[in-house]
Length: 87
Image 1 (cartoon, rainbow, N blue to C red):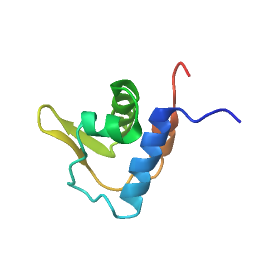
Image 2: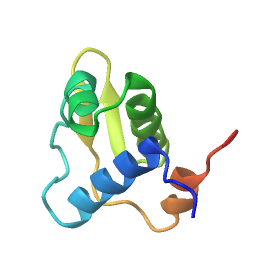
Image 3: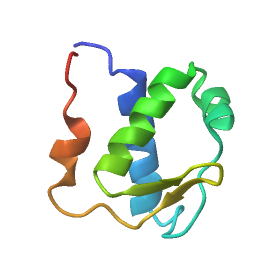
């Protein structure tokens, strides 16, 4: 069984936290530096995870202000999130 890439673990964790209600619409996510510490990784997988969640409409980023939860993932967004070009 292949190892799950770190960015996928981050995506899954954030999605689970939203679905459980731990993170709600409008909540601010920790900074990239804090997420790097939490997941014990570089900024590359953190940025990849956040970018995919933003592309799927789950998160919204604001330059200089942070990344915020938009709400629960819309049905059908999992394919957009799980696509992994080049991997």
